[in-house]
Amino acid sequence: MRNVLVSGGSRGLGLASVLRLADSGYRVIALARAPSDALRAAMESRPERIVFTACDLADTAAIGPRVGEVRKTYGPLYGLVNNAGLGTGGLLSMMRDTDIEMLLRVNTLAPLVLTKHVLRSMMSAGAGRIVNMSSIVATHGAKGLCAYAATKAALEGLTRSLAREVGPLGITVNAVAPGFVDTTLTEALGEAARERIVRRSALRRMAEPADIAQAVDYLLSDAARNITGVTLTVDAGNTA
Image 1 (tube, rainbow, N blue to C red):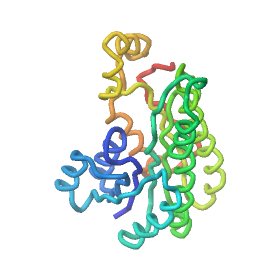
Image 2 (image 1 turned 120 degrees about the horizontal axis):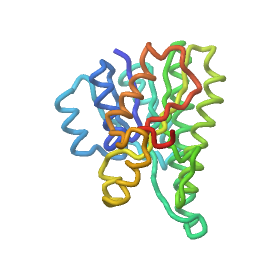
Image 3 (image 1 turned 135 degrees about the vertical axis):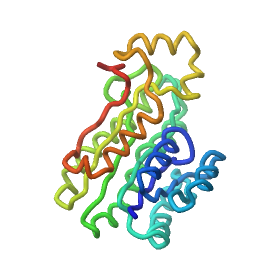
C-alpha cells in the first residue's frame, strides 16, 4: 500500500484530498496540529486507510523528526501533498510584520523543509509524487493578498525547479492552483460577492473541494507519470 502524507489534512481542501486518496487505495497520513471532528469520523470509517500525525508546521525544527517517526511507523512515503497554509489577508501597508513572517513560515518555509525530509524516502525508492497547493492569486494577483500571493508564487517556483532536480530519480513535482472554491470560507464573502465570482467564471459556477481533491489524486496517480513541473488550475474558468 502506498503511503501519502497530506499536510493540513484535518479540514478544507486537505481533508477533501485525504478522503479522495483513501478511496483511491492509498494509506493517507493526515498531518495537522490536531484532528478535526470530520477527520476523526473519517479515520473511524477507514481505519486502515486514514491515520493522523500531529505537527505544528510553524515549528520547522520539529518537521524532520516527525517525518522520521512517520517513516518508521508506516514505511516509505510515496506521495506528499503540501496543502497546509494560512490565508491571512490585508493591505500590505497595514499588515503587522509578525503576520507576514508567520505567512512566510507556514506557507513557504514549512513546505520546503517538509519536502526536503520526505524527498529522502522517495529518492531511496526511486519513485514518488509531490503536489503543492498553490492558488490562482500566485499569477493573477488580488487586492489585499500580496503576502499570501507571494507565498503561493514561491511554491510554484519550487514546483518547477524541484521537478528538474528530482525528475531523473523518478519523482514528479506538480502544483494545483484552486480558484474560488465553494466552501464556508467563500460563503463568508456574502451572496453578492459570490454572484460576481460566478458571473466571471466561464462555467458560471465555483469549483468544489472534490474538484481540487480529484486533481490531486490524478497528479499522484500512474496516469500522470509523464506530467511534472506544471501547475494545474482548477477554477471553473475564472481566469480563462
